[in-house]
Length: 495
Ligand code: HEM
Image 1 (cartoon, rainbow, N blue to C red):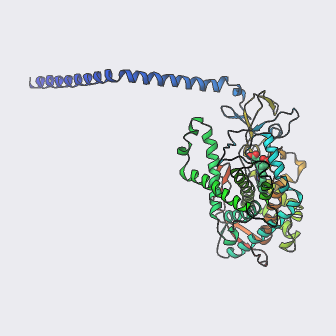
Image 2: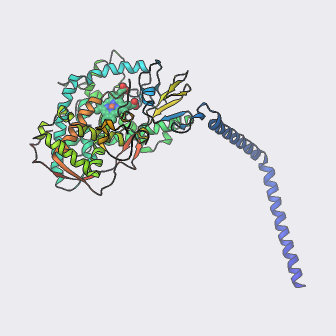
Image 3: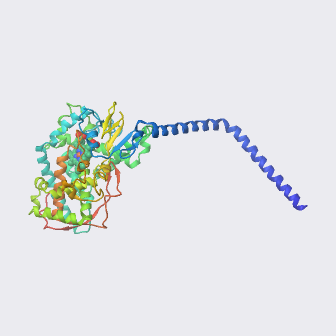
């Protein structure tokens, strides 16, 4: 009996509690129903639209027919990794069609992203800029440039002799100091003083962070609704570096404009056309920056990559040392011409730029409105296309054992196992690197001098090139090496 009473009261209590709950929900539902209904309807509509758009992109978009070796890596973007795609996308085409640089990737504005030779999309605009700068890359200019390169190459050797007895050296710093000092002198009329001070100039640190600013800008541009909010999307330090870098470059180039250097530098040729072509101060700064980044970071990357692979492949290193040390009786004899006649050195550098391309991503172009053929396939108009440097040089269809560092593949051309023309670290066609000759002079001299003067051993031997972050250019971590002198120290150079 007692039990029944208790059970009944419990049941009653439960029911009361449930009644209360139902009442509460009821009142809330009636309060929010209209708003919730609207919300749910809009959400459902958006979901249906997004799903329909996604299905359209996957099954009915004109590019949906591109599976396999051509990778559709964005709704309207194709990546080719065949040797033949290079000429169809970047070179002068037989059908006269021009694939311009994709303005969504090469972003420009009137201030911190002012257009320069690398970023302008308009072919006529570009041709004018290229003409303006051509004197800076003439044979005569190259002779002067070799003097500057020799000067800093000797400075690098001195700095390494000075520091190597104190323990392992971070090669990344030493190559940055050297290549940025060379380009600083060529572009702004003065070096950054990094080699002399044995310290990375603060401007260089900002330049390297500034590279991320450009890469973030490209990523943000992929979602147009983010562009207006972009200052909130960038990481704060990247945004600051991008702006500081542009402002400091403007200050530097305007200071250079007031100087009158004895030897013409890159700035001389640009300043000479400043009025005639109506080049703004921001554009002046952008040109100088483009030259410094294009010319220094890339060469430093190649040299770091070379010494990483040499120290990981002792047989290759021994063979290269033999070639270089047999060719020269003293370090002063190392000139660009003589270093250029060493086949194994050239093969080692070619192989470095294949396996660790200084600019590893694709440089996007847009197909003309009427579409065009690329590598034997029809591609509709307005499609963004590129050959991604890393993909094409690591594609086993182009290179046998693509992850193996084997300079011999560049020497034994009868082998035919490799499509050597798939590796184009300097690009091809009218937008190809303007500094290719200077780059070869620089990397040959610097590599030959270091191979001649030192024996390097990597601390904690590993493949330093793998696993690096990339923001168009590699974010290079420290690379510590033990440097043992192999020759008596030369007379130091006054920097
Ligand atoms: C190993 C070293 C180098 C590599 C791998 C390299 C690679 C490249 C690549 C791939 C481009 C095309 C970029 C694009 O279209 O977005 C380029 C353009 C350019 N590079 Fe280099 N570069 C190197 C060194 C240099 C040097 C030393 C200079 C001298 C300052 C230089 C000056 C330029 C210029 C002016 C352009 C723009 C050409 C144009 O659009 O007409 N580069 N480089």
